[in-house]
Image: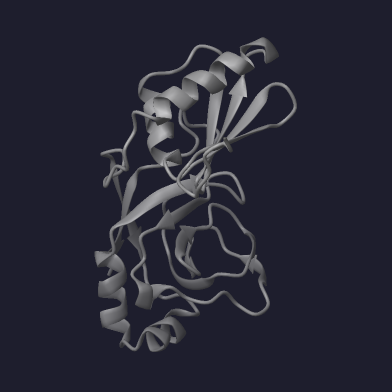
Length: 210
């Protein structure tokens, strides 16, 4: 009998002998479960979109970890909410692409800013550069096409929209997303006990500053 398959079933892929990719639509729920109830042998879990990479303490833990993860996934169901934490990000909406984005959404500037601040965003995963979070949850009209040619320098603190995502550039980097504002918040600081203030599952809300 062939093995069951389908888009909702998890797949496992080994990266060498001490890291395991778990690809599943329940990656967010599995990540939350592992944070609440860590598994022996798992040193760290690194989330991405529908993907969780497990870094193991030792190669010998691998087979047992895979079996335990599969069993735990069977007990999980899609969760509507995030981690329970909500971060409010103050934003001065004066980005160079703000008016273009408002027009693309069919709104005036004030209505566009109000719609963006009303959006219920969530940290899907971290990546690109330390402290950069991919924020999901943008309503369809607020999803902006990326620039045809990325800017060579995007200032730190820039609030940006790109495809289905929103984000904040933690430091100056190149970038191809549309810039709509800026925030004074610092999203990567090695001098803090927690260098990155947000984590996957956190809810995020933009708040317009005068």
